[in-house]
Amino acid sequence: MNTKRLSESMEKALSDQMNKEIHAAHVFLSYGIWADDRGYQGIAKFLFRHAQEERNHSIKFMEYVLNRGGKPKVEAIPAPPEDPESLSACFDGVFRHEVDNTTAIYSIVDKSMEEKDWATWNFLQWFVKEQVEEETLAQDLIDKLKIAGGDRATDESLFTLDKALEQAPDEAPLAQDATADNP
Image 1: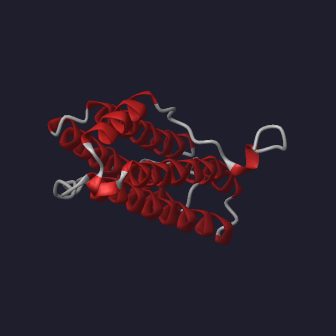
Image 2 (image 1 turned 30 degrees about the vertical axis):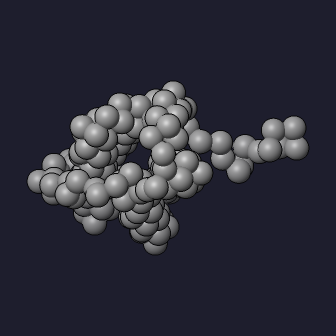
């Protein structure tokens, strides 16, 4: 008896996203190594934590496909981009990568609606919310660097930013959680 509850195209889309999440982990790992090499250990730790989070996202996709009777396919992961030229380029790269990931997830959400695959649609809602958080965190990186002075920031400002990111929470406050008492 066939117990697979995913279409072939949905299984492929979810497998592709699993691999995309692993690629994101490699990108953030690469950026973290770059930051550490330049003395930004706090920024590196922040990026290493997010690399681990992306690996965890990949496992969520893998488990879901397996639980629906499918078999996810591990593909070759593209090499991460070249080292960024600056912290601005690094943080811009993180943001662009998150926006690209959001677009890919939205595409699978659209596909689940077209196929009336409500289990997959429901599964993906966690990722939709997660991507709002990820984009917010990435935008916060860019904003914090701008406040510090951007690529012309003083060593003191960059030291303070580095220490702040080392201790920064891994979650961003989201608009849907805001209240009058907690804006």
